Length: 465
Image: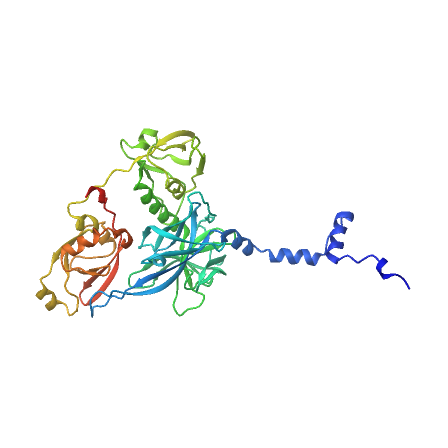
């Protein structure tokens, strides 16, 4: 009988195939190769490339109910959840305002499972967008979402949504662009214009997450679903979202440094390179030689301890680069002026101090208020509110005007406090913790209706008080 132990062992099929490729130059099994290629679809690649820039948000917030039948509701605490996208490697995250509004502590879970907290740094309730900053080590850097454009979207093209759906982190759903330019009213206080409609499943917790195209570029911020409907979700177009994010970051930077460069405004919803609109007189930008019409190509610091350079594809890139800089910093600015490319040096200056206005209610809120005698208030309004302030004038372009407050409305509450006297209002806006309330929630009476909204108030420099 032959010795079985002397027989050579058979090699596995995939090893044999590999040897045939190397030795004889023969192809491996067509079925195996095709199967691998089929699994590595464009959707798989899109999700893989974007995943690291998507974060999951949780937090506890107060939910209040406006009702003419009683005083301002002190609210109840509920757990909220949402999603955000990293738009700057230092940990600046774009999300929906309603996700972080009123949240006591924003808890963040990163794509690799790490957890941290974040703080709210800027927000725009009107467009329902906000920016938060992760609490991490200063030198830590994060993957940034790849930004596309919403200007060329086509109904029927495939899209992918990523988010914290119902608390299930990094849930991926796919669909198509169902329609463009949708106007949606989701509540008495929130109306959206020019949304992307998609049939990719968007659920509670997806808010603030990215809507991706097939190339893995963010083309929208998921924001809302149609209650009671299936396959109807909405996203803010990315061009509009980036324009708002740019303005928000510009306001953040303006608190520390001043450059005097005012970017030209793009058409609504359309992003493009940063073009200088105007240059303020006697500003650092004027001293640097910048002129209206210049196109900012890049900025950086070649002589810094850690040299860096940022390509400016949109205004957001410019404002991101300035976030951590101090007054006195020299920036190398490359501009395109007609057919010329110029190298300029822009030296940042300290942001001018803002003086406390003599009439903070009018200057900050844009309302002129008049107390209503208690007896007259009780006779005019059948409500258990303690009293209110008649709005006798609204300044055009002010926060009050932008929120739709009208002359004749009666202000009855701000945040959780009643506003019976003008002193009540000034007490609220001068509170040391006002930044955590801003934009402050307000309650008004208009006829027999109780309405509410949010007033974004420019911060007062308390060092000058």
